[in-house]
Structure formats: structure tokens, C-alpha cells
Length: 561
Image (tube, rainbow, N blue to C red):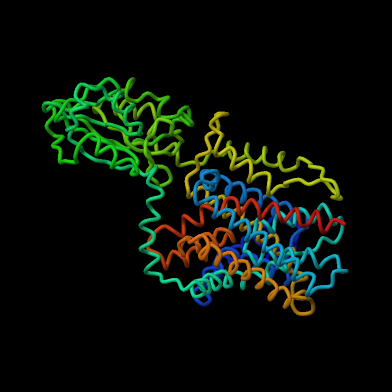
């Protein structure tokens, strides 16, 4: 039986370390699925399982715990960067600017209330109290990467006896999850919101996205001005972007190009942005039913998957589908969203392109674009680790700021997430394919997260009980609740009463600012449309970046003296 006992007691053996992490992660994930009051804590319960293991004396060498913690954090934030990268820059368009400014205000209010609680409720002479309040802050806003960034920054400020701020995080986190949902419900009653009316409002708000959503229609050419005009002339005169994917003239269906001449009573298949549909219809002619089967050359429509790395980043205009290949592209589907196929739209690996034309020409284009699902099944491992290399180097660059005891750097949390966002947007310029399937991204991200949470919990477990029972654990609980709730009530009410945002969009914005999936799940239960997800994804990238950055700034500015 000695061999079995050694598995649990020989803390420096590989078998013990692997067994410890496996137990903590398995127990934490399983318990995280249990719902309390209809809400589950999810994978974050791994932190609590790690704390229990550490309290019971199940641990590993400090350098091993630190390595696994930091590597897990790097993997986690890098995969988050790849996930949010496509929407990061787009989130600043139109209403997204206002939503992001409201999100920024909420992040700053969280920090201000944390400092207010620190000066009101805690002994400022104790150097450990402010770091512990930082841990409480990130538990209150349910943001694990921020906790990791703060932990890393503490290592450069405290050479010995680094405060185990995960205790503050663990104290504040449960009420943080409940407080976010509770505060959004409170906004509903403060602003006298009627959910059924909000559902009706969503229809008009959806029209704001009509500029990119494709609209398809069959038109009969009845405008006498168009007779004898080429497609290019009509396009230039209208000054609106549209694609004419096929034309029926005297029973003959063909793929039009820029030199195709329109005649009266021709039938055309037009694809355009929703916002341009009515003007185009008014100019060309009325909608009608068309028997496209009356043709002497069969035409096919086919969705083609872009998997050829050389296509990554090229615009539809650069591909010359109509003039060279004899086909037309009507729309592009990216991450489940249909986009109008404008000439300046850049193709990315993973896009699905709707191609219309003769069957042999469509098959040729299929070969050009790749259309190989097998290529997309495996993540681009080389790109991921090249990005991590660049992220670590970028995050390690020292930035000297007057008045700070040590140079600022973005660290292993900030550097990789910024590089991931940048290479996801611009990686094609240096021939990097950044496409990763959603399942692969989730797998790598969750592995990184559970490794980080387990490590933090095991390290904090030894002193956690003393912190809660004999220390300031109760203070961390109620100050964390204040940090959670007050900014939501202030900013959420302003977003509704001043900026008139839809309540479901506000719910998504709050969930995204607090990077809290349970709050988003609750919002989705109330709303039949995608408004909460839009609000969430609009502010999530900037919020995640700010949470990581402010964690380091607080530690380096206020804890380094």
C-alpha cells in the first residue's frame, strides 16, 4: 500500500502532481455544473476545489505550480484573443462606440468603488490589504484573466511573501455572479421596462445592421433608361453596391459580367445589402417570379469553403471571379453571419462563399478556394505558438513611466491577448492562417483556464481558512458585492434612460463588461432574439483588455511604493 499512499503524499513526484491536477479539475468541473438558485458557477468551481485540496495539504512544488499557472493563463488569454479578434475593431462602429464607452465607465467605477471600500473598511497601513482588495475586485467582476495579471504584477513588486489574492477572489466570486444578475433585474424595475415591448423594439434595431446583411430578389427590367446599358454603367449610375448573379434574356440564362447589356423585359437575380434593396428595385423594375429552369446551360449555386491559405486576406475584387472564372459570388458566411459580397470584402480561411455559375466553372472555383473540410479540423498549432512567442516578448517589453517604482509591462496576460487580436486581424499579411474551429478554440481555452484556476486554488488553499474565519473574509464578501452592484445600477440606468438602449442589449453589455457567461445565459433565456449576444460581443473584447491592463496598473502604481 505504500505505493498508493505515495501517490498522495510525495508532492515532488510527477505522478502525484498529475493526479492532484486531475482530481482538482475533475471535481471542480463536475461540481460547477450543480445549480444554486438556478445558477451554476461553471468551470470557476475548479478554484474552490483547488483551495480545498491545498487546505488538506495536497500540494506540489511552488515552481511547478507557478509554471502550470502561468502557462495555463497564457494559453487561456491567447485563445480568447483569437476568439474576440474578428469583432474587436468592428465593435467601435455606430452604437458600439457608445456601448464601449458605457462599458469603460463601468470598469472605472469598479476600480473607484474598490478604492473607496479599501479606504473606508480596511487598515491602509497593512501592505497586504490593497492587493487582497484587488483580488476581491476581480472576484466581484468574475474576471479570471485580470486575477492572473494582478498575480503576475505582484511577483515583480513583492520579492518575498507574495499576497495570495485568490482568497479575496474566491470570497467575492459567488456573490459576484448573483449580484450581476440581480442588478440587471433591478434595472428592469427602476426603468419600468416591459419585456414584450423590448422584443418589439428589436425589430427596428435590427435594421441598423441592414448595410451588411444580404438581400436577394428577382427583378424584371422595366426601366426604359436601362435598355442597351451595360451592367457597369448601371452600377456606376446607381452608385450602390450590388451583385447580378444571373440574367434571363429570351429564354437563355447566363452569368453577367461588367459588359453584359440589359434589355427591357430581361429578368435578373440581384443580391445587395438590405438597406439598398428598395432603391435598386425602384430603379431596375418590380420583383417577380422567374423560371430559371428555362435555360440552355445549367447553372448551379454552391457554398464553397475557403481553406486555401493563399486566399487568406484577398478581397473579392482581387479574385476577379466574374471576369476570369465566369462565376458570381453573392454572399459570404462568416462565423454563422451572412455578409454581402462587396468587392472590398476580404476573404478569410473558414469563410463559406456562395458561388453561382456553370457547373464546371463552379467546380474550378471550388478547387481554387480549397473547399477541404479536413484542412479545418485541426487547429493551426504553429500559428498559436508563434503568436504566444510574440505575445510573451511583447508583454515583456519594459515601459518606463515617471513615478512608478518598476517599469510597466503588459506581462504574460496582456501581451498574448493583444498579439492574438492583432494577428487574427492582420495575420494574413505575413501569411499566418489564424483560423481555428470553435471546438478547438474552446478546448485549448478551457484547458488553459482549468490549469490556471487549479494552480491558484492549490497555492491559496493553505491560508484560505484563516483568511475567511480569522481574517477579513466577511469584508471581502460584502465589499465585493458593492463593487459588483453599484456600477451596474448607475451605468445600466444611464444606458436605458439617457441613451435609450434596448433592455436586452443592456443585459448583454453588462454581462460582457463583467465577462460573465452565466449572466449572458440568463439574458438569453428572457430574449428570443440575439440582442444580448450582440451587446455581449460588442463590449467583451475591450472589457477583457481593460480588465487585464487595469489589474497591472493598480498593482504597479499603488502597491509598489
